[in-house]
Image (cartoon, rainbow, N blue to C red; front, side, top):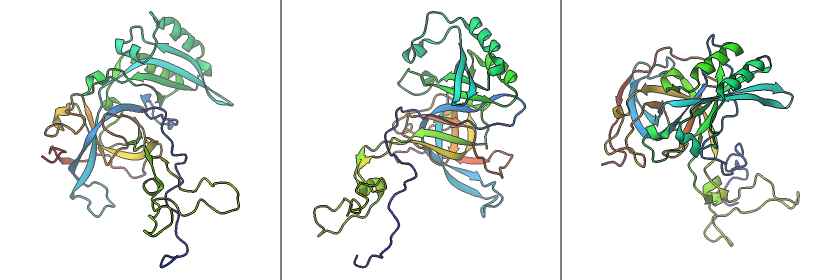
Length: 337
């Protein structure tokens, strides 16, 4: 052991096993929190990551030693063009989980939606809505089927992302009427979230391919005179048990995993992306054209990746009612020119 202590903590966290590639480039939200609201509302939104910058804002957390002072914070900019509500889907609770009951689609979906789904020639929307009303007593959850509009953002792709967003608050009949009113219409980020609010971010992290145990798990590089290898592990495990334990650091996929980060604060929701465009455009993204959201801190994923937003599942207890006062947003070029 040399000068090394005999007992050392293990390298790397086992909390996110298995570290395998995500199935799709857009994250999947498996849980929607309950919302105590009198009126129904959408519980999520979707946007595209543009890049990062830094801002100066007045610290409004009363327990912070910098309360009332101007502080600098890192911020992520998301381009959030309006989402299109193209369908409604209802569910019922069963002993095996949620089971789909009925669904309803808008009459004239956009042409871009055909790049994602095989659409029939005509949707009988009225007949679909009748079936939803007939099964209203069995309905326990109502979700809106939304499609993003990447053609309104600074993206080269035309294929939209189609996902479900649950409707919370109010009663089931109120939620159904709310969903019917949204069918075929667009929803902006301002209608779902507000400045100063906390939210959860679901995204796929930046992929780094196949990496060895030193980079993937942070194990110690062995001594230069070591036998066989330096950037491997010293032992695969004991003689007993006679199998390789899952906790042993091995080479494999690093990055491109689904992650959810809780309680990211919205610093600002803007209508014109020109307000935050940096000189020369964001690296690997360009200039913003659609509305945007300024979120405190970093967000998983690379540029142009779809980011899904959700109302907080475990919000902080002490939250300022007023939105943060942002005094300055850096518009310097990220390339350093």
